[in-house]
Length: 267
Image 1 (tube, rainbow, N blue to C red):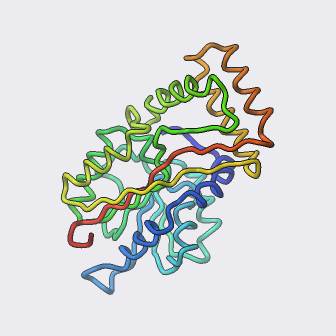
Image 2: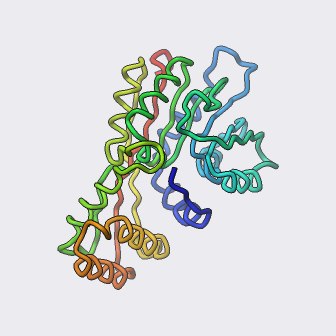
């Protein structure tokens, strides 16, 4: 799976927190409290946990009595999550290959969570995971899945070509099979409904402006790197320089969706 640095994850976290749909996140927290075994811990398994962004987001909304099982392939990210949160939460950390669905530590979870993960995943991965989740009657809260839309102000004539090339790149293999990219949420919804879940989807766009210059610069450079092999070099460089030169007046909306899926008895 493609790696992400602590620096990048920290840089995007404020935009993620602003974008995340609060009402749906609160429903996810409420789902953690619903159980037929009141003495069992409120266990959330966070896939692709990184440094604990999902934990922090739900903590801000009042999820303070949750046992977190953080799962990631990157041990350094998990170490950072433990450094930040081991004194305030009961945390289990599991370094493992997310592709091996049968070995994911999902047992006992009331809720499986993930942020900015499923657009990196393949249809086969999503189908297998949803089948496993459905078999144990566990809810799924999946936030910040890229939906394929990006709008810029001021506009540039090359915006559409860049977006089309970027969306194509989002569907290459990122380590979890051929990625669904912008099609991830619809695939998740279909797979979860097929195993008897009630699914709610909400919009959670990044809304960036001149206060997000550092993130915008990294986003522009990241787009350049993703599409460099598929677009005319000179035209792309002109687009990049235009974007960088207009950071003081920039507004950018990057579309994402949040999803909450619960067994129908809880929905």
